Length: 276
Ligand code: OGA
Ligand code: MN
Image (cartoon, rainbow, N blue to C red; front, side, top):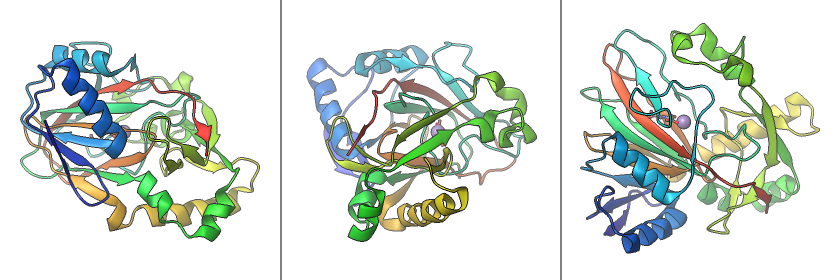
């Protein structure tokens, strides 16, 4: 198995490995690569739903998303679907999965099932690299802060998604809720300091006025979204990505109107996040 950086600060490509048939030693190597990069890309995989599930179960424990439809094949696999006729896509803005849970997901394994001819890339950002590059004054300002993460503004009764053509494929309106987490966490595996806020779910710093939060959050978001911390993955049939939700953001390009795109996602359970 070979692990090659995808871009200087964002992701790595794992080659010479079939996820479906890897042995235990390779799985351990894969864990190390996942800890080091937080974002792994795989090409030319044969990973039907039962093998997708088996890989997820070998790596960790599966956790089910509260809002997404699941696949016909398994209630443990979420469907990230955009029909030809739909305008809105799932995950179209920068976010990290499940940060609104008290114990956010460790990571997500996304498998391409039906792809548009071109477009439909997924962009990623590296929040450990972004944290390291913050000016010291800003690092000091973030010390000890906690932030509120929510899903109500997206999936609640009056949430954004309810006013789009995605509304019929989302459930869980009554399962919305918030959680608070440290703004700078120590990554449970790598031990690196990571900036843990994201545009999709973080609504404000705990105990701060909304406007003051907004100002600082926007400054942090602009910092993270810079090219040196981000990359864009072009899906091909057989592509798989596996990202760590504690140290990356992602967003899906919505540049393929009139075409269909279908992905299968399995999310893995994480652990409570500790302040750095
Ligand atoms: C997700 C997601 C991005 C994509 O599955 O969590 O945001 O590119 N998907 O489909
Ligand atoms: Mn997502």
